[in-house]
Length: 242
Ligand code: FE
Image 1: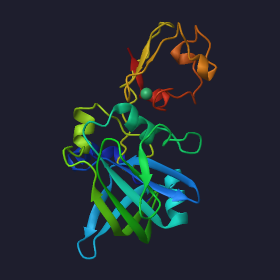
Image 2: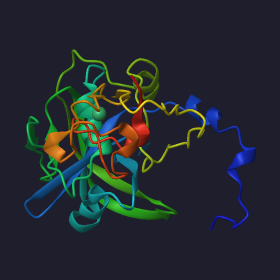
Image 3: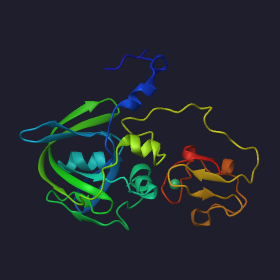
């Protein structure tokens, strides 16, 4: 249990950025449905038989599928995975968006989908243990299949994602740290353009977002709170003045 008076403000949370991680899409299935989400918390915990663990947010559709099917797959992303790809799997919800549409993949031995695009290798596991950890569940699985998909590619580390790709972390991620509320500058000008920091999409108030019923002339501040980037699904918090 976490104490009611536990206060993270006294902690130097930036220290946690020095932990090393790799970027993966964790995926699972339920009947004919499939889903996946970006995580940076897949790690091997036992050598023989090989077992891996992954921390997944309880609200994620992938979490629900892993609990129901008892299987999961990790597709290890390469450094050249584009930001739109990371945004789609990291920021959009599989409840209202088919993340695998327009994505090259195939079912693995467990039936969980394996990404074949910008993926170095994949690991499939059968669920052995689930540990409740506050907002997340730590799933532990026995490896039942694994293979290299493209040995010419370099796996993407979390540091590379942040420093080179200038990637951000969704609030649902196991390693999310709340950014300072002073970090976002709001422009007073109604026609200020805003850039998605995940995929570089530009919101132009002069054009609006007609496909999502946003009329031309709508300022960024006047967009609904639940409006998301039409390219990658990032929320308004992930935009900055262009
Ligand atoms: Fe975007």
